[in-house]
Length: 225
Length: 356
Image (cartoon, rainbow over the protein chains, first blue to last red):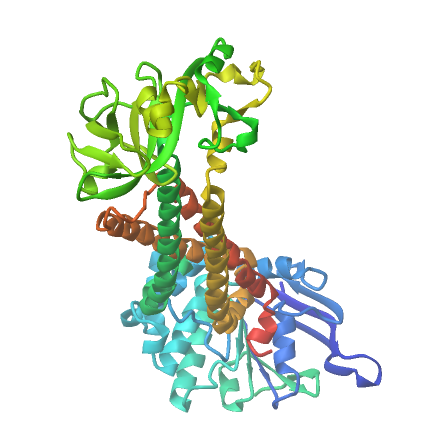
């Protein structure tokens, strides 16, 4: 059963002759345990797709189903609740709170949501991401790669059904970028999460189950060998 | 509270500065309130000690005790109430070395306005007085013979009493006859029933109507408010305190707004993650409460400590319940100052904040 479905979703900005269709009529679905890449050049509509799918903005038309809940007609407060419960974000900019150490980044989520990982699950996640030694460190004390691994841990800690990653390897060198993709793949399979990675780095597609290509707001499934 | 406290722990210097400003504002508020209470006491403590409900004065005196002139017999009109006769005049007393403005009260030592003598004895005859113990700091002692500026009469201090100042002058309590000798000199015999007012203790004074239509009954609080300069002084100090409440609110609003603007991107990311406006707003309010509470408590302690080292000439008197009320108001206005930051957080668009 699909965990995320976009049916005839369109997102336009402006009106009349100034209207820009950032996302043309799109149909998309993703199953639990799938790692999906959305590739395309800058300005092609990838980020719009990600933010619409993640409930950060409403579509101009069409429906978005997250775990069978329609996001398209909900207000920001209602969408915020669904984001907290169902969706984890890994953003280009660090999604870490600068004045919280790694452990407290997770505790923050305990303050706003129940049913997060248990202590044992968190320790195992720390081991998998190789950040156990960093748990008392603050974001400013971490390298770019370490920050991104902590951001992945934070996104996974709330046990989301869907993980949306926007250029998660943008600030990393090739070696670290492959490491991060390897981790995302492992966590996706292990936790049956649906992970969608938006990237312009085509070297990363080898880690993904499906690859979509975005060109001028049109999303197409790309055949992979 | 989790976010608020962790941010304070991580950015100690920044928050110490904010607490410092709040502490200074609260210190100033507490000190001004102490000064307001002290100056008020300076004017009214002898009247407060009467524990009276009203005073009878002549209508034409315009509620001024020295300007009122009536007779002891008129006290008989006021039935079913405890009454005390009072003569009052202002003069300057000198014991040879020291000189001080004083207020002389002529009273009946058997009536309720007779103060408790804390040192020495009650006055027992003409020209004997019980003095305010604040005069001791000016060099006056038991047994001192006092020359007065307005008469040749010599008064002798036979006792001291506490909390006895009226209209910023220490009080000398003596017999009515002593007061009349000082006031009328050789004409004292002809004026032996002349006094300035009749003090009433009792709840039913409103039903009293003196036979003399020229007299009026004034509630004690109204009488105090009409002491020269009392209301103007109290209003000035209270205005300063109220302005400081406003200023502290603005200071907190500016500090928190700047801090919030610096964190817009962080709040945006948290909102994208599904953390609600309510949680973030509560965090800002909790942080403001913590900062204001610490600032006010430190300001409170600092006020009491510095008050203990002030010379007695400074008219400061700390009324703890009033200070607690002002402290609570300071915390409330600080929280009101945080409302701008809360509105800013509510308006943050997570999409823009994460650069979407």
